[in-house]
Image 1: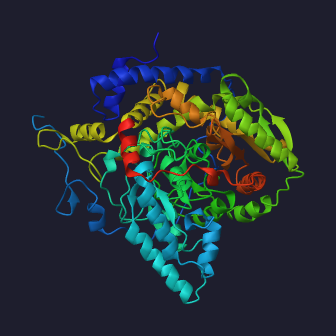
Image 2 (image 1 turned 60 degrees about the horizontal axis):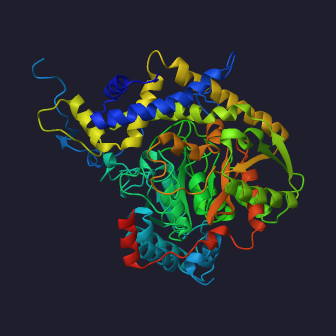
Image 3 (image 1 turned 90 degrees about the vertical axis):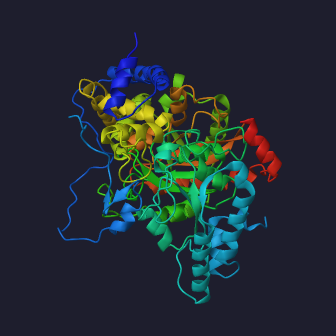
Length: 99
Length: 510
């Protein structure tokens, strides 16, 4: 009995905005199954009363004065974009035209 | 040895400061070495000859003017391509960032520049630092200078190979689960993962934010310590940076070189030695010979039990991919790098999916899917949540062990450099390379890998793990071990053929 099906992998890929191919789905389903099997061993561990660790060092909020700071020049930032227009990143249409 | 490239970073720094060599001579020697051997090794994705020589010339002018200079001024360094460098291509070895020129410097890049160290170029790695062999680089693999049929480790195989092949005296790596230490072990070089938060992640291309740590790669402990001190320290731009003095690693490396470890207790982890977690026999033999040397230097070996270490691998492979799936959401084809499918026929969401499909390689996709799974409703408690709980237990194992011992030692990696293609078909077999390095990342403490010997003619590393902010003890133990070696292992690597016909043959043969 496998932990993860090809259909589930396809669903997860959609959630992660990955347009995976059929070949990739076949490969990933098998490989992820092996990996997830090993992860199931964590269920053996007794963690009653244990607090989670989200970070290696104790974290406190870091505050600074709410004062303007220099930011990167607009042109320097836009220069890295795949497509720009009118001093902005140009993006494809967001809604389907039929909608 | 007479060649410039054979000298240690500490020697080069002194030669430059005291006028025996110029930084331009030193930097040129390494650039020429890159030109001669990197056609074979392929450690660099980008070489910045002009930029490196410009910095070198500035240093020489400063020396001539009698100015006060930092401890590594004029000594060139190679930088892993996951660290952002203003004006120099930075891709994290991914097609999705191909051609991106960052408009800013990472904090550690700023510190390298402030230290007046010429940047030779950017080194190859597994894409987004996910891998143990550089086989997942989108731009081709790096070869191990000891045996070009074998992996140089990963993700930082480019930095390790560059130092092992003497194309750079020093390099920068990043370590999320072993990406500095495992390449160090398999290339006979020294690599240190500092305490998490003791240096800045600002400008590191994020993989797993609660684990990523930049650190030094060198041929010996003292050189690494010098670079460690250059890049470390608090940074207000990283909210997880620790506002405390940098542990005195240079002094510790110098103290360790005296070869006296009397009074020091070194822990060996009982669970590492058992069953499925055991290293291959040749690695164990080299490691145990190193342990004997440490005992001769006065260290006492104490067995410590860390029962939760057995669960470190699955814990890591839930936490790191979960954080990665979130961090890599930024590659949407809008603000930097690649965009695919923008033909007027596809919506923004479709363009995102097509861009990510075209731009990410297989291991990155696998981890994004795995992380998305571990974080999805219905599974988050059983997987990501459970991993965070087990992470606490692993941390507690370390804390209890450090009540009994000053540092913990182990082999760095269970096996010597494996052959190309051996583990790409089964990702889980690749993950095992980090079996002994991952616990330290989950805990947040420091770990170094120091060359200890050979197995089948290939280097083996000994790992020294310390308590949080106890980086100095790891350097002291490692430098003491080096003091027992007549020649640094890194200086016994076979000479690389600079015959271009050989390089071409090599290319075809892989």
